[in-house]
View 1: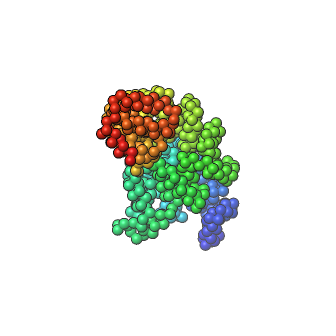
View 2: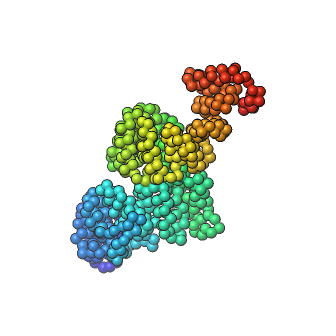
View 3: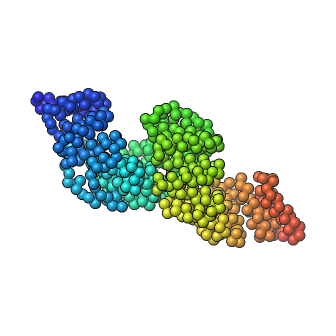
Length: 558
């Protein structure tokens, strides 16, 4: 057969692959390989077999070739076949005995000297070493050696920043702490034309920076670029403004900041364009949970279960059951909620949100041992995720084990030192241990770490700070913070009661009586306010009304 005819057959194989006609591709690739015995044609045949899901046959063909241990393409495809066959130990043996240090740097460079013969390679392709590192990471993760998996994923993204899957595994599986994520991104060597990718990756990692810093990152990608942006980059940046992945990251940030309505509106809009976007769906469910939108959760759960009725797509099937669990949790049917959260974790053991939901469903019914078991599993599986450790601390605090709670809160702080919720819990536990100065310090640190402006979500932190200041007899500062809390929400019994009691301690009986009345308007049978109001009235009648005090208090309520 002439060379032109052989080349035409190669073209037929490539066209069959592009049209997903894998049986046809296998048929013609087999004939080309038989005629030429060229390693590139043998590889093409093996690739067609792999795409046609004939993994055992593809592996046998590659392993029988003389070049399998010398050409990285052959070795990598043979390992991919073993991955599909779930033969993880054999997969690692095929990939070779390379070493990696704790920073994700490959210390054994023998692979770099291997052949890599790819006639069909593109001008810009993913480094084969990066792909091999990523596959090693997947194999170690399947073997539950998550420490080694983390190192190899880091090695993969360092070997080639275009290997997005490695970064996705590190981020989605919470393998790195906040600081480790930042350090990893800072040491990636992007090409001069990949500035946009560096900015995009910085939006994917945990976003606990101040609002202006995070918003600047989003603007950098959404705008057409500054004066230093090359014309070729500007068109890319312009198109990213409406990119679903970028907007899903922004929605995730809104949820993190407590702006649940804003988050819900954005995810609703995104899901109209792309109803099967995984991250957007997850954030949408979380926002609906926080807002108490049980009808939306019910509809989402029904649609997901209908769209993914069978097991083949475990990831979306797990998300379906997670949505059902969210619905039951929202309507306070916790037994059913944990049953579906458990189904989600059994389908996808690396589903962090399902593990947290499973623990929270037990915690809602004060079943502490089972809740702690779920949180501990999550803490073991996701070493870079601080929420399981934080929830363990909350459970210890609920049972008044304050020292143990503090230890776990400090551990959560070491994992994610930028989350204000961690400092709030440290303040609460210090308050319970009557360490009021420490409590004030933690609450002030909480407010300093809030990324956006104060919202009603943080009202309880401001009230807690005021309580701690009152305990330290710093009454004027306490009153300032109670009034600050009232500016966030006027519906809190605790704020009015605390303000009344603080005025009472200052012997400002008129103001105290006014605020006790306001507190009792919210809860007429509140024992503390009823008793203290009686005392305040008695004190006022005994000491008389100071006209100056009365005018000051009157001024407060104009």
